[in-house]
Image (cartoon, rainbow, N blue to C red):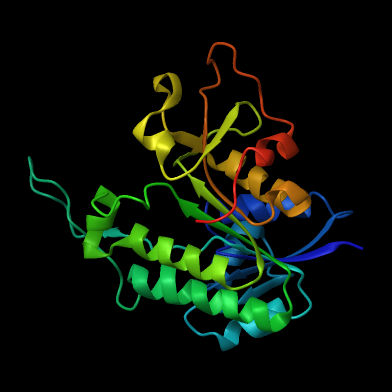
Length: 256
């Protein structure tokens, strides 16, 4: 039996990598994608076969996509937009499109997905979030006055309280770099941000985040865990490329 998985935010830069990785394992996964734009789906994947067009703000559009699924991967996120070009010497200002504030997307939109998954009998939800949620004064919260990390954190707690098995992956700064070439490090409560090991950057390639998602769907050790994840640089002395994901997940813990 293959695992039927729905990936929301499927046309995003990380979401599309997750879809592609799942498609490359047809013996293990049957994957569906969910996004707002059929044109974007066509542009990214060359076909809309196996994809659903809908809006996470409208719970009813999620029901058909989740029917028969055993797992849901949430990769949706509000996206700040720059307000015009800043004057020389001024910091840019950011806003969110009308109706797309983090409260609507990262909180209510995720609640809609969790509740639709629960109604569909989904057994496991993998939620990809961001590090920094323990700090209300994090700079990302000030973008467009959206408090994006605060709303993400509230949605994570909602998932934990839902009763569905969960894996919450809080990624560091996302890099458009190749995956499978670094040692991954996991932590909790933004301790990796506060005290980076050996002073390494608190970042990770999107492709490695996508692989963590895939492995979380496969590894029992990833169930009912929430963790931060970053990577050592490719040339870090003594770094061992992460391949044993069961051992990586064994270092993670339950709860927010």
